[in-house]
Structure formats: C-alpha cells, structure tokens
Length: 110
Length: 113
Image: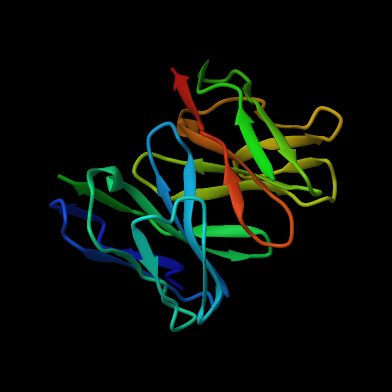
C-alpha cells in the first residue's frame, strides 16, 4: 500500500496562476484533510472531507477550493495564486483518531 | 473550542540525556491527544496517542507521554536521547464530534553529540 500520495513535490507559481495539488489514498478511509504548514506556525486546516461528495471549510479556506468525487482522491485547487499561499501543503487521511500524512507539496508563489 | 500550547519552541539536549517536551491543552470536550514527529523535509508520523484509556501512553522509539487532566498537560518524554531523535515535534488535540485536529506550533529538538 502506498498510503497517501501527493503530487507534485515542488512547484513554483507566478502570482495569478492557478494549479491543482493532487492527493490520493489507497487506505479506503472516509476522512481526508488538507493542511498548510508555515514556519513556526504548526499545521492549519484548509479543508476537510468526511466522504465522497462532502467537503467543509477548515480554519484557513480562503483562496482554495476542493472536491471529493471519489473516496481515493481529494484535490486542492488554487485559483489565483498569491505570495501568501507560499507554504508546504500536506494531505492526510484519518482512521480511529490516527491521521496518516502524505509527503507534502512545497509551493512557492512569486 | 480547543487549543494547544507547546511551551518551548526549541529544546537542545545531549545524546544519552533525557528529553522533555512540554504541551498544555484546552478543550471543551474530553480530548484525544497526540504527539507527531516531523523529520526534515518529511511528512508527519504519529508517535503516540491518548484516547481516554491509560493516562501513561507509550509510543514508538522509546517515547512516552502522560495525560494529566488536573494540569491540562500532555508532556512527551524519553529517558535517553538519540541523534536520530532530532526533529520537530507537534502536540495535537482533537475533540468533539468531528475529527478535526488542532496543532501546536511545534518544538524543534536538537540532539548534540
């Protein structure tokens, strides 16, 4: 089992560009999450999903969108990239109060 | 509402000496508490979790934590530090009817030879 996979690992965007961060899990978990990690700030929840077709906002959703058409996939969309979105993004799934994290996507917006 | 405070942003120890990483929490519910570790340029890995069973929780790599409700604390300890323990550690609280986690800001552990 691969667990939680994320693509790409690194990306540089120009201001105003858009992109989708991909997240796939093969653990058949219903719960999935997107976090961003900024230095010295811990992880902040962007969006989460409790199952296919159901998503909800987390703590810092502005500037992002998500969809959940299947159990496996939970992509995160940035429509108009801004320098404030420079961060490391982690996708995670949850089972029995244990979250499993992907390796992360390091995004720079210049 | 829930929150986590990690009392030290950076802890430095010598190899072979004890490790103490401090965490206080607040929660409106009976909390579940976790410690995660993040090695450089890696994702997060669960070290241990408390979910209302035994108050002394043992985790991987010799780490353990004690849930103290009266002190609202969940400090992480290890008797003897190893060089491979150098990493960032996050205390995390979960409570209520959903599975949302609240992360502390992290404690960077440095282990000196």
